[in-house]
Image (tube, rainbow, N blue to C red; front, top):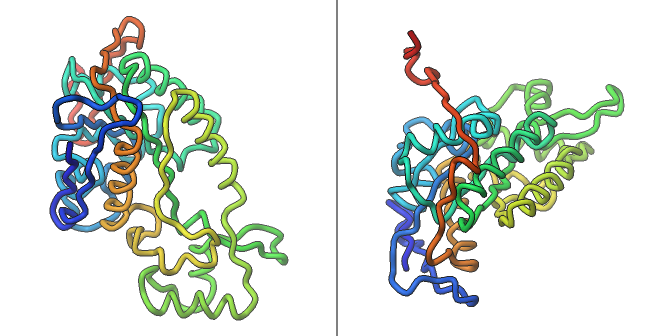
Length: 287
């Protein structure tokens, strides 16, 4: 069973070996992926990105179904799971489901919505491997404590406040950041990161899922060399970031394996819904 990472990552092929627990299939077959997530999984943030080939679901498999929605959290799949999945294939069965809502793991409304979405997914796909994406970003997640303002200041505010505002990937930005370290700035991860991690671990445990992490530094002050994984806005994934996540998901699939004969649960158990969206087209089909 071979997982082909497309285009310029073709040389980084991952072999999907048989599971030690005997879950591997006797005959090779394409692994069926479906992805849920935010604008990062959708492919926002990088000019010229090809959403049919360059985002991590499509790097995992050209036939992967990407159900990520821009400017939306887990409330969409919680309410519209059936509608979203049936738009891709009414009776489709998936071996691997990826979940990317790490950014939304602070608000109770989002947390409750994701729990609902996960329970619906697990009832529909009782044997699927569910993989949670733990990504990170520069703007909003890295900063320092301003003792004068008595508050936490993120990189975006700092970049505007001190000297000329510089693009995140520029040498000028790096030099300004290194100078700030020399001047005594103590850069740290946002205090809420630990809370996000705790919620994500609970989410994964609730459906017997796995968590993979986008490559990031242990200490926030060392983030400069990791900028390559993020888009120019310091928030969304870069092409390199999509490749990194694809490699890590492939690795966990290789380690855990997939169910040889996954079952398809009933919508009577997973819950029915009818949803209509005109977000992308601007054309409302309601009369």
